[in-house]
Length: 212
View 1: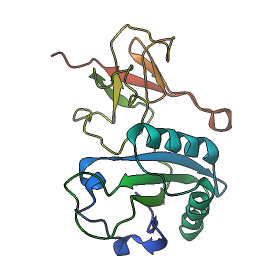
View 2: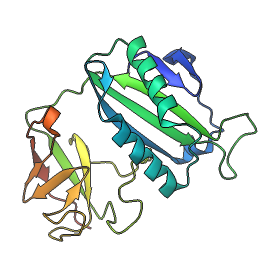
View 3: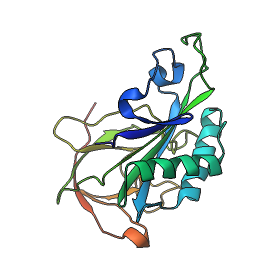
C-alpha cells in the first residue's frame, strides 16, 4: 500500500488532497510511463539509470518531458523524507495531459508528474505466474516501454502476468530464451535476476499459456 504523502506536479500533498481529472486524456487512455525504484537507506537506488529509461520511453511514446532529472530527484527525496522511508520503493509517473480530442479545457501542464512511495512488497515462497501468449511483440519499439496501460492482465488465482512473444523462440534481445519483465523462462521454471546489491534468486511456478 502506498504511503500518505504524494508529490503531484509542483507540490507535496497528503494523498486525499491530490486531484486527478477525467479531463486528463493520458490518464483515461493510458498514455503515460512510469518506473519503480528501490529505496535503500533512504536513498533512491540507480536513479540515473531509471531516469535514462524514462527519457527513452518518453521519446518512443512521444510524451513531453518538461522535467529535468535533477528536479525530479529533489522531489523524489522530498517524498522519501516526508514518508520517512528507509527501506522501500518508489514510483515515478509521467502522464500526458494535453493530447487528443477527449481532454477538458482545464489548465494542465503538458504532462503530470506523480511520485509516491510504499513499503517493500512481500514475496511468497512460491509465486504463480500466468503466461500471456503473444502479449508482447518483441520487434515492436514499444516492447520495452513501461506504460501505465495494464490491459493485458493475468488470470484469476495468479499473482502476476508475464508476457512472451512465442514459446521456444529465441530472439536477439534475450538469446538464452524467452523473457518478460526481466524474467528468463526455461521450461516451467522462471528465474528473476537481481543486481549484486540486492541479489536473491527467485524461482516461480509457471502455468501453461491459454490456448486460443
